[in-house]
Length: 65
View 1 (tube, one colour):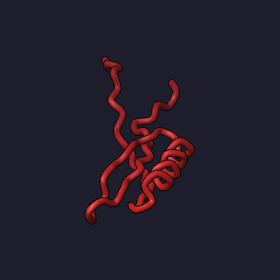
View 2 (tube, one colour; view 1 turned 60 degrees about the vertical axis):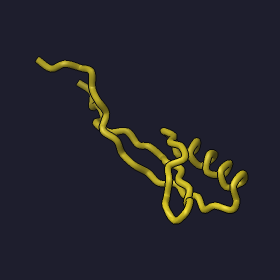
View 3 (cartoon, helix red, strand yellow; view 1 turned 30 degrees about the horizontal axis):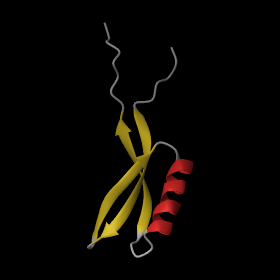
View 4 (cartoon, helix red, strand yellow; view 1 turned 30 degrees about the vertical axis):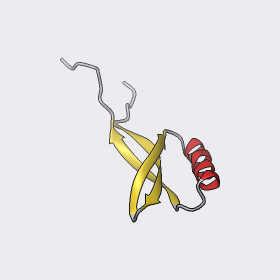
């Protein structure tokens, strides 16, 4: 039996608007998230953006006996 992860990593790009951080987009790989972060910073330089990492639980469809 192979190990199956119970969580997935999400890399979230957030923007600072009116003093609050808001989620812009979420990617499953850091490379894709860094690319989106660069795009947001280039297109909206008047706002601060950051990249954060979160883990979310995976819902398994496997039924156990």
